[in-house]
Image (cartoon, rainbow, N blue to C red):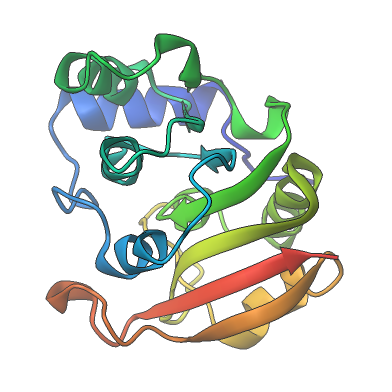
Amino acid sequence: MITVINSSNEQEFWDSRYEAHETGWDIGGPSTPIKAYIDQLNDKSISILIPGAGNAYEAAYLYENGFFNVTVLDISNYPIENFKKNYPQFPENQLIVKNFFEFEGQFDLILEQTFFCSFVPSIENRTLYAKKIAELLKPKGKLVGLWFDFPKTDDMIKRPFGGSLEEYISYFEPYFSILTFEKSYNSIKPRSGNELFGIFQKI
């Protein structure tokens, strides 16, 4: 049985967090490792998806640097509306409020930043995440991002949810070639030592 996968309860949960300004995961700008990855991309025409994007600082950074084919996806309307206000030039049809697991599309690149860690960490949910990411990627498309590297507990309430490199690999191996997956060397200070940076290519 799948525990929770961004159901209506999840939407209510995230709406309430934004309403209460309880957004401790928000670092106020693009994540350093992802920014560094973006900086070495040469093809600015690629299609990019950022699921569970929150305030989507990475999307803003991409757009400001000439990547115009960027889709921002979140289950809560609050961060999407905030993004519209902060970046009115960003195409509104590329800002989507929807359940990730019901979203359809095809992308060259998906960026992961605190989305995987946000939903209940059952084996079923995490397996479905890996499968859905693969479905959303074009052939040879890439998943790039950060995963928290600290023990997963039995607490199904306290987020973010952690895990281990070995556990994460078990979900991704059926769908991806692992190009890089190791301790992040350039995480922001509060997360230093607790993040894994990964690049996965769809098989």
